[in-house]
Image (cartoon, rainbow, N blue to C red; front, side):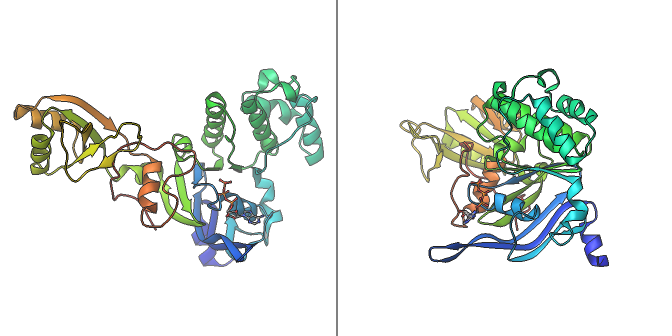
Length: 353
Ligand SMILES: Nc1ncnc2c1ncn2[C@@H]1O[C@H](COP(=O)(O)OP(=O)(O)OP(=O)(O)O)[C@@H](O)[C@H]1O
């Protein structure tokens, strides 16, 4: 390995550069991944996020040697893959397709067979069942498990050889909120043990809560990556303000240097729509303010005799970051499956590429 490569991949679990993959299509080759530069730090949960068809599974399959890249480089813990995958594969556990187990075998029995097959001591079976919170259910048949328990059994299977890097492709697909919460908790605790968890999802808000770092991809390339706090923090807090005299309030807020917009909410529509003008007697709406703390807003308006009826701070989320990044890209307007916040988009503060 060259010195330059060693430096670049130092402290990184996964690094890809210029990764490209095409598939044969009806009209020539279809690009699934185009020049993907991915940086996954070692340790912590990394969310690999993007809408359906953005190239997440294809990327994961290439990393694991299940699909061949057209061009580009990939490193896992500084080892070039797929060239030297056998050297590092023992440190990697992955769930790519929906895992299946014999329905009549207990979870414990299935894992024991697996442990024997991969040469792991049987004593690990009890440990990994405990780790994923299935300690008390190991003797139940697989068919009696809930979907969330089935997914956690699959995670337990990947833990048998105690990997440093866990790669999960959409592990919460099809789970109910309780199942999602269980799997999320399991991923977080694995990262807290010092492992790296690379988890893909098309629902940005779902992984946002447990991820330390994320990459947001669209059309096979990275749109932004970095810490969750760095990506969502830059635009500042948005505060929804309800006041009887919105015109005066907007003027005062703008004079004080804040960004204040009137946002009308049409009946039957979730999305807020910014209007050039407004008529408070007929339009239902609210003022969205960025760059100000709620206390500053209420003091400023109160001093001018405008009494605030509603003051709701709303946190900017990764879905909003995604929408901002894709506004000019011609990409799908909303990541599939996610319900984004209704407020207007704010700008800036992301590590967009
Ligand atoms: N085996 C294949 N043959 C042809 N095209 C493929 C194949 N696998 C994926 N694709 C195409 O490559 C693109 C990326 O697909 P991929 O499954 O990697 O996306 P994804 O982000 O994982 O999506 P999802 O969230 O739906 O799983 C899509 O246009 C898809 O149709």
